[in-house]
Image (tube, rainbow, N blue to C red; front, top):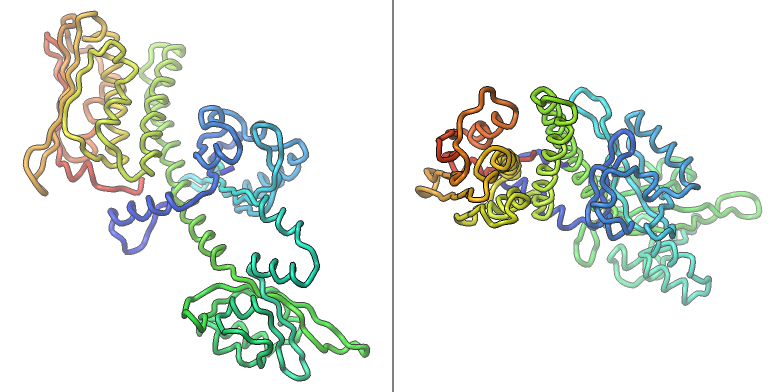
Length: 464
């Protein structure tokens, strides 16, 4: 069940560039739900993993999509953990659209609002079936064990406590980058361990033997290529006939990829949580303003649904661009598509990249303009036309973005007696948020809406 606001010393442009790189690199299913389990986000990897297209999954309960009946008790335990404000990570069995089940590694976390209240759930998952099948297929023969150790990146060791000799396998040597050895003195390992983690081994040696065999994670500096790698170690004590410890048999394995994946997952979780919160806040604002200005509950429902569709369309465009930026041509075409079936909306202007915030604002404003034009303006008459033009005046930091919507051929226009949410949204839109000027004029020949604002402000990357 599943927006990472990066912090640090990076400027906002580098932040967004890094976010886009990270999102491109992650090949994991990302899903978000509200408190009732209704899916609010479903990425393309989730489509591939679970078989449901995003348009099929959105608005449906996660329990009916990919939780098999036998998994309901575990799902309830996970939800209780999340409601307690804790993240949950582990292996579960989930269901594909075609009905078959398969093992998945899942990390779920609660989405909290600024007041600390839980408003939803965000989760990241990936299939582990290949890993399970590989382990199940391994035989115990010496050759197959060697192949299995290499394939799984597991090196084994046997420490003779009395002699201090450590017998190691080929894969063990490869992991540590120490060349081919059959035995090593136990104290030699300290020089291979990262200086910041040597105390982990030193403190273990200073404690009882039982503490030494516990699960430990630490970094090493490989001796052949000087790479810093994360290792995990676990062992078992073998006792002699008198019950005294004689040997320790154990395994080490490289967990560097897992550590990096955990870091990426945490960044992705933070970014996705941030974006979910922003989207929920925007939906709440649209809902509140729609209810205030609508003449009836039925009208409010219709208008609210149309505005949510416009918001979803703009979000989909941004998702395709990894939330880095969006083409103004794509945004304008998407926002006017449902009202341009007869080709009466004419658009022209250079292809300009807009930040996510500017793209959403322009998309919502164009939706309101199209809606009003279809009800009262140029698009309500067969001869009506709409011209949408934009261009950039000046260069560099002084460049100004100028945008114009002009209606013609429709019925005579007069200014509305009162301004609703849609009118205020149109008037404020881009300029109100980005430091420029915007205005709407109800000329007799048709409505004219124009914007003039610094281009740099519309292209300034933001974390929201």
